[in-house]
Amino acid sequence: MTKLIVCGCNGKMGRAITACVKERPDCEIVAGFDRNTDSPAGFPVYANPQNCNVSADVVIDFSHPSALPDVLRYAEQHGMGAVIATTGLSEEDRALIRDTAKRIPVFFSANMSLGVSLLAELAKKAAAILGGSFDVEIIEKHHNQKIDAPSGTALMLGEAVAEGLPYAPKSVYDRHAVREKRDPHEIGYSSVRGGTIVGEHEILFAGHDECISLTHTAMSKEIFAAGAVSAAAFLVGKPAGLYTMKDLMA
Image 1 (cartoon, rainbow, N blue to C red):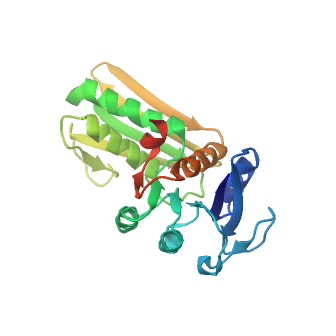
Image 2 (cartoon, one colour):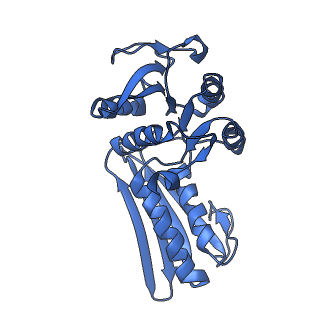
């Protein structure tokens, strides 16, 4: 039985993880971290991670970038794995993740959906085949409450495309700022925010007289919760290191 601690347990994703774990006989949530210390699911909830002494195998962080240092510190102090699923992380945050992974197992992905991970692999292969003859644009859509833009998933997909291209692409986020023709060696990003869109990502390869589009649409947050829980179960018993969805899919 994999024992989990969920950071952000009373948020939307935290509640989705709780519901997901209830359907899995191999996992159990034994504690949670949240500013709201209500305990509707029955496990203890702590506003300060340092006050928690509950034995667990993995902590899942689906909260806010500001909580990352405390979560990683807690996981390292207790010799447990950490699944980082929070979006909007800075390069400094990512550096902290990489450094902590030298001492404990850390699973990190900008998107916990298996479908998105497959999309990234398909995009990489498409970029390698199409080479420099197709322009690449990434369009992402999310609900009107999402703060960061472009999304972490869009940037992750852009990195996957870049791995397959024969050149080092330049990222462009705002075409309004410069009035000039498109540089063929760039990846353009467009962000849409509206309504209750859970998440949609499209990678558009636009060539001469033809276009190829790779798209993933998330219908609910449950797919991200399921991916995070699977990542936590995967992490148990693993040595220190940085793990991603590629490792989970291998």
